[in-house]
Length: 206
Image 1: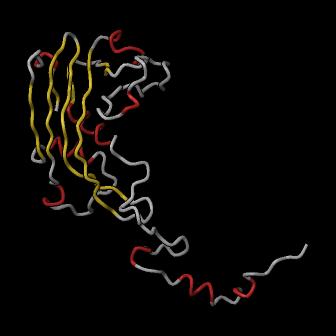
Image 2 (image 1 turned 45 degrees about the vertical axis):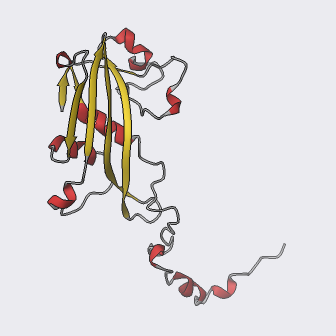
Image 3 (image 1 turned 60 degrees about the horizontal axis):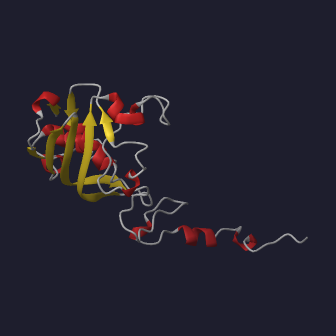
């Protein structure tokens, strides 16, 4: 969903979208780790509520908003799919002036080439305060803002380092791969009845 810069004024532009907008679903699904093999309309059209506010301040475009939905992730312990609820607020600054954008968009300024998109950071990320050395301004090399890219990036910021279906997840058996959340597997019985089980406590003397 492209919003061209000449359409943005110094007056607030309010935009609301839902799962009925195809580009919204596409943006959310980019973050999913798990997708149904045979999706139905009910599974594909998860509830999504997105609100954007756009306003121009001098040469800077201020974009803020909210998104409420859920992501389909895979548990890092048991590999089962689960939903992660997201209800967040975000904000970011955009401009076409490379000087105003600062060192964040320049090649060789501490970021590898091709990784300098400078998407808006999460509004609640306290690490944003870096003393002004790296401005929170996205450098735009084109004459539009892609709301789908912003939505995807903000949802990616919600991904946990270690996704868990629940804190008490028991994971899977390292031997047979059984889901230990469903109960104990038979590996312990098999190991105890092995003909080599008598050697379990054997130690070589020094």
